[in-house]
Image (cartoon, rainbow, N blue to C red; front, side, top):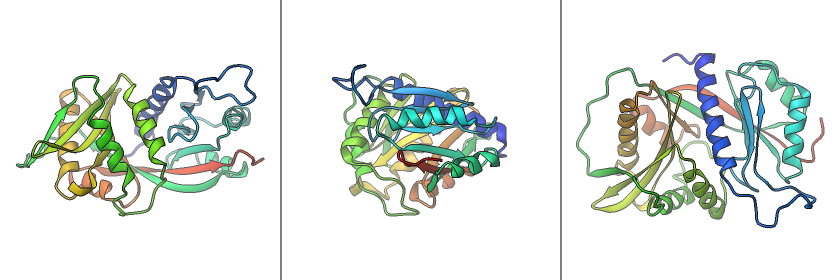
Length: 286
């Protein structure tokens, strides 16, 4: 699979729509009204083909995604986004694709953005034949009702304990992780999966289909049951379901060099591009 600018635009645009869906599905904080000196209501602002979203204070969803792949970024548009984050007490966080226009990165750094880290975007061409399945002790089921348990508890427990592989990524307090997981589950397009070992919940994951892109997201394993093939089983099930749904590309986003990246590559995913995480402190001025 060739990592073209067009493919990057499809993937980042789908990610932008997911972020927007999550943010706009979050209720405004209790007590927030127009008289407050610091607004706290969620927002989603278009900027080029990308979007700037704010869900709630401290949320990992608070970011700008899809910026600069198809068009230049104007100072006025970016300033409006930065101000929207500033009045909510948030830094402006941009996830910038390596396939974005080079002048966008230069423009961001000139405005005081600093590199915070990277994330890798891996893809699988679903038009290729599926790999032969192998026997496993892990059973994976699609959650077909609105119940969040045990999907939510397993996901939060897994994210709370890093597997200590690869480059350390951003971390968030457990309470924030649980909140954003609930917010994520509100998105109507999200499919949720639970993996079991001997009948006990061992892992959980999600998938969202958008324009032929199947985004594999939110996967974790109970710490005590890691290295038992849980993530492989969850990935295989979602890839099979994506093929059945007519998707042409499956995507996984990981921190660089992690076990999650290794699991994806063993199942045929290949690195398409990276995103640089650039942050401008809310007190910074260009």
